[in-house]
Image (cartoon, rainbow, N blue to C red; front, top):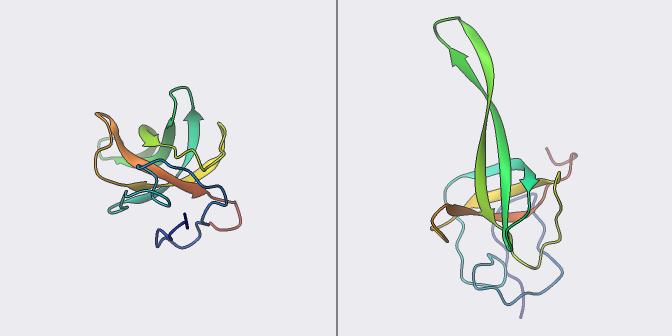
Length: 113
């Protein structure tokens, strides 16, 4: 089975092949919507990771910025070998489970931005 390109620049097609139907490279899952760069903070559930997105929010009352973070559940295809602490690119998809609407597209290196 030949891996197809997802169409996102800076993300390489994995070399391993998997039979997961929820894989954007070897299955039928389409990536549409938001594309985010985040860090993996948990990898406990099989084929699911939790990534943490950090951002700044302007508080109008105090006229200051504050740091906030949100956690996003994402599907991890078996063809990708990732660990906690890795900087990854995730893309929005159709809902895969009750709380999973993103899929991990690959590892993002520090050079690529």
